[in-house]
Image (cartoon, rainbow over all chains, first blue to last red; front, top):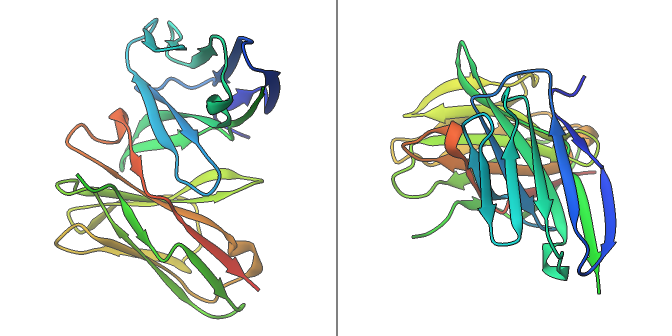
Length: 113
Length: 114
């Protein structure tokens, strides 16, 4: 059972369209992070949200952390071809041995011109 | 400042061999984590090291091991390679805020086992 479910798994859209990617769990996280990964490279951190209900904006990207800190969404306005990539959400959970970061399987976004 | 550096970028090994991967974290970062990324399973946590001690470990067999040196550089070793070990191995470091505030990842080592 995947602890963090991301949807959709794949998304193919035209430049200029809007889209939303979801990250859901039945577990509570102390923080939630979003990364973007391009082929052949490691993931790059986009944002960290910590407080339930928190909304953060990064240019055309809007990130929201659910009130109960179990889910998050990423909304992209007017997508561009440069937004193409694998979007990963990751939740931080405190465990006995320390904090663990659990990743969803990702959403592959393809934006065409 | 320099990012997280992983070497080598690509490796081809034969089943049964062993391999050592290296990671240099961002200067000043004391926590180094390792992940395995495959198309089917996504990113799976291997282990985390902090100040030369393994602080957390994922659910991987004992063939996967790691260590961290006093300068925070880390290595991971996989012994008796299996075909299923073919993957992108990613190293990530985190600073004073800890893992909860995010990782900086390296570009990864692409391991192919034949």
